[in-house]
Image (tube, rainbow, N blue to C red; front, side):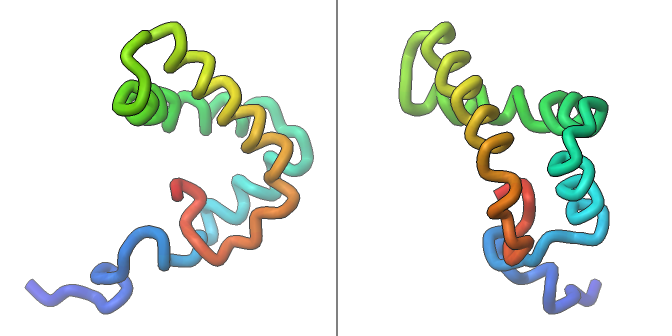
Length: 86
């Protein structure tokens, strides 16, 4: 099976997709449903990632909560040069 060149790129080097860019526009506009969708999609992954650095689940939840606040505060600076996931 042939692999597209863009599929071989690391995730951090892929630009945001059109779908992600639409999501970013909605987040910038304060669309609560879009934020809820993003949280539902990524929250569990972020908890697992945080648990790699802290052993207490409650601390991991706090870390992720701070990360979500950072997303909201920094969404206007996101340039789309990488995937939103990264």
